[in-house]
Image (cartoon, rainbow, N blue to C red):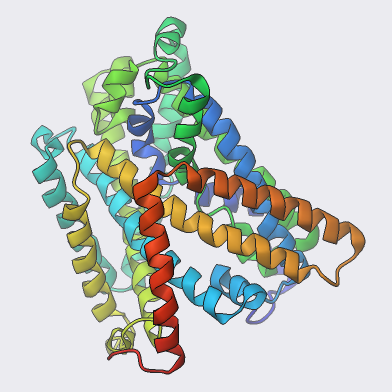
Length: 435
């Protein structure tokens, strides 16, 4: 890693735990109850299983940081552990996942805007509005990192209001009979319903590697990074489960699955339309801040990938201020096309398609990281070696289990992208990436 952080400026266990929890508790959950409404309140078991899987995956990255603290970022870990080609493939998968995630978060903005403008909930207007959100936030990103940073500062705490409102007040109005009536509305067996919920639920845990990525800024990282990862994932999982479970005791599953703003709908049942409008505004602001930040990150990722020869090199040219304007504009065009290409009869269905793709692409890179961990620990002590192997096997099994649940179409798309990276890698190696 580039440089050390002085001991006095390093994070303790508590702060590192909050960093993990804060990074996981984002705007991505705002539409999840609508997706899970098609399954039912039995998805609570999906949350428990996904949280356990996230803890194991977090253990993979924590162990990598213990034995190889010099690695920067997920792609670098994979490159060092598996070779340059696999680092390249993971970079491409991460890049695609970034802009698909941006669309999903922009959909959350659109969904909560529909509280005030119901016409937006129609497929055509959903696509138009989501595209407008993407372009507006792209313009903010072009203004530079300070503009994005100010958006994050403004929206950071606001984003918790919808979750806390549902997760605390919701239990005061919780209806056990309604929760039971919504238990399994999928038409599948209980096991199949829970299995079918896992991929969507894990969307909330994408980014579990964040504590390991900043290990050099944590006091006693060998001890505190694993504990912070476990604690942060556990804290985020509890908040998610409390909020999501409470919603099923407030609103019937059928209404949730048809909603474009499930948390606003739940709060409306408790406190009325005015409070629902306030929750919707909070969700819009937080989702906008998150989406703007990730659009900027995607632009930087595109710039870096192009500089490395992984993408057309003309995308590697920032403007005079160092802002990747070309990359941002091109990505906005790509995302706009993808918005219309993934349009579905309901906003919740489109959201599910996008987040499932993001999760599958991310899980593929997590499998690579688990393999890299085993290779990194060849010369480690017997205890660390054994722990690494068990953790890697469990993480790989969990990831493959979720990937296999994604369905034939998404599996074929993932396989096709992976295969396309083979000839692309030979182009990259020859330095002949088209400009």
